[in-house]
Amino acid sequence: MEVAKLTDVTRVYKIGEVETRALNGVSLSIQSGEFTSLVGPSGSGKTTLLQLIGVLDQPTSGKVVIDGKETTDLNRNQRADLRKGTIGFVFQFFALIPTLTAYENVEMPLLLNGKNPAERKQRVLELLDAVGMNERGHHRPDQLSGGQQQRVAVARALATDPKMILADEPTANLDTENGEQVMEIMKKLNKETGTTFVFATHDPRVIKYADRVVTLEDGLIVKDSKAKAK
Amino acid sequence: MNYFKMAYRNLGRHRRRSALSALALGLGTALLMFVAAFFEGEMRGSMETTLRLNTGHLQISNAEYDPDKLSVAWEYLIENPLQSAAQIEALEQVKSATPRLIASGIVSVRDESAGVQIMGIDPASAANDPYRTMVSGEFITADDRTGILIGLPLAESLNLKVGDSLNLLVNTAEGDVDEQQFTIRGIFTTGTSAYDKGIVFLPLAKAQAFSGAENRASYIFVMLNDREQADAVAAAIQGQNLRIRTWTEMNQLLVLVNDFSNAYLTFINLIVLGVTATVIVNTLLMSVFERTREIGILSAIGMKGRQIIALFLVEATLLGAAGITFGGLLGWSVSAYFAKVGVFFGDLGISGEMLMEDRIYPILTLESAINLIVTAFIITILASLYPARMASRMEPVEALHGSN
Ligand SMILES: Nc1ncnc2c1ncn2[C@@H]1O[C@H](COP(=O)(O)OP(=O)(O)OP(=O)(O)O)[C@@H](O)[C@H]1O
Ligand SMILES: [Mg+2]
Image (cartoon, rainbow over all chains, first blue to last red; front, top):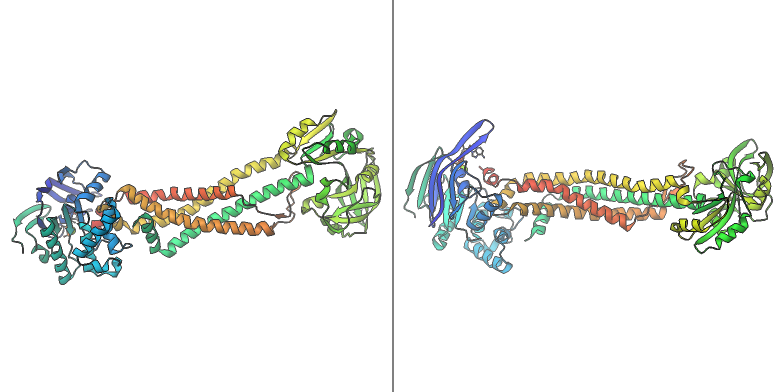
């Protein structure tokens, strides 16, 4: 099944008179259950592509279909709704809400999805357990290490059982050990739950986990290879 | 986890900033509350003082009588005033009615003198109670032929005490001037120096004889149980060649000022609250800018625009509630304190139609307190709509972009 389909997508940033063609006609199909890496030099358009798949942004031209839904005509709220039910995010910086505990951060998307308290509690505990953070639920982000924060972020991304998790350089701020650990967790979840993962990364440690590697250069896909995943 | 908890923690991130902006709102509210109480006290006090001392609720005079002239020529006066007063006092709505004779005169002692109103009063009438507070000496009696009462400021300026004698000139009914020695029986204070410095009291009979008014008076001074009855009572009193004036007619300026003061207060409220609201807006704007990334994250995980607005509005609500509660308590305590001790102004030199006591006692009405609190709250919420909407319009892309 196809979770995301991009057809001839361009994204042009305009700052004053300067136009940057971050994506220059990209077509890409992401299948359910894939564990895909977007790679390429800095400025090649990885983050831009991820943002379009994540409906955080809209293409200048072309078509983005997520979970069978055409996204180009959706308004802000409809896009928020689509994200809420379908997509989870893990960012390079440990994007937890600083005023909330680990537990509450994971609970947040469930709240936004209107889950009842009993369901929420069960799910949060289950997820914290899955990322090995059940001991630290009551900690605030600033009381956690970078690796721990990123694991909480993964748990949060998974909370609503999204079809697809998008991660932008999730290991860039982690040391080898913590990076491996986070990747192991994601790989395991991918295998166990069939959740689709798409990464933007430079990190060979991430790439080695991927079973598909899409290479971007100057806003174009120059290579798309099925890798032998570990 | 709910909006309140989140908002509360967000405010806790910058405790001092939050506290300061709540404090600004609080002080604004407290100030306005005190100003409102002060105005209310001043207006009510001024109205009451003017009615009690000066005009009463009704005055019944000869149709020809001109209150500005103080003439005691017979054609301006009413006849048999004690009898008429007794009749009027018998009316159910009337608290007291008493004749008064007013003439112009000059008090002189040694080489100093002062122009005064000479008022002849019936010492037995309850309507004269406001003059009965004596600094020293005794109130005057009806059959006293040589005694006089003077006010404290006049006594001080002419250096007089009880038992001293003074010379009094009067403009008589015939248009002449008469002169006589009087002995000070008592020195009174009404609490309104502007009034006390310009008036002396004689028993009615003596004033009538002295000024040549004989059995006449300038008007009958009437106090009612309820001043709203003035028109009804005025209509009930019939009489040929009489003029009946109600307190609203006699105090048009005061009534006007009274009505105007509410509009004036509303205006001040809006200005002060507008200024304090900008403090709140500023605080919220700062936190919107600081939390750009966070708002992006919330948006990325599916928080909708109106939920983000709600989050910031709840922050404003908490800030507002804290500030306004504090301000309300402060304003209330300050008003309550000054309601006891009064605010001393002394003789502001306001005379004529509008009298004010030397001390103003603020009155905080429940209505104005609630009014103010509600207004402050509404303004706070309205003001915070702007930063809240701004937060809700941020693109989630910012969250990712801000990091790379
Ligand atoms: N918000 C923006 N406004 C203007 N230009 C932008 C914006 N975001 C990205 N760009 C430009 O678009 C191009 C692609 O950027 P993008 O962030 O997608 O690259 P990337 O592959 O993620 O790079 P990196 O590996 O450094 O993260 C770059 O030239 C970048 O300068
Ligand atoms: Mg990038």
